[in-house]
Length: 184
Image (tube, rainbow, N blue to C red; front, side, top):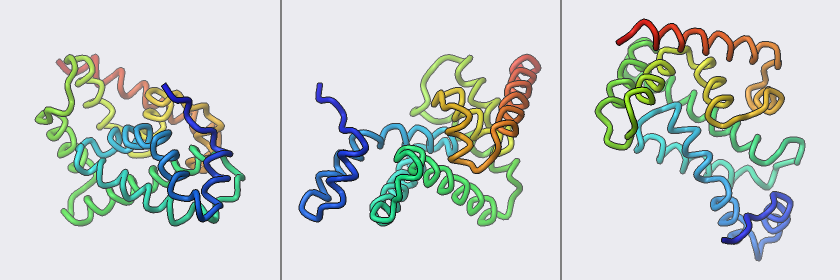
């Protein structure tokens, strides 16, 4: 198995017009799956996640020349993906003129009818519980639980203090525990 390219090598190749496409392909190979699953956990639907992941990488392509290395490459891309998800969910809410709670119910329906989501009932119940969380708490929970991100990395992505993130994660866990124990 080939060793994935280091970010510095990718950025260096991207700066050179002759190796820019190769660099972008390296970037896709290294990060596309991680970004897809981050997006998928927020929007649930595979087709929406696929479209949004493409949008994220289009933005990465357009904005990479201005990347200043003041954050890790993955953190920067994660921030773009997170913003795309929030924008998508807000548009969906406005387009349908419904509350975010209704969007969450719609996502839960998608989850239960999707053949893309396989797994046992415990996993499904966890996903349903996550959908009951407000967007910010859902993001924080997903980043910590699924992506095993450190709070300082999450702080960079979301522009929120570490203390607020810890509180948000703690509240999310409590709400998920309550949902799982109170629904059968």
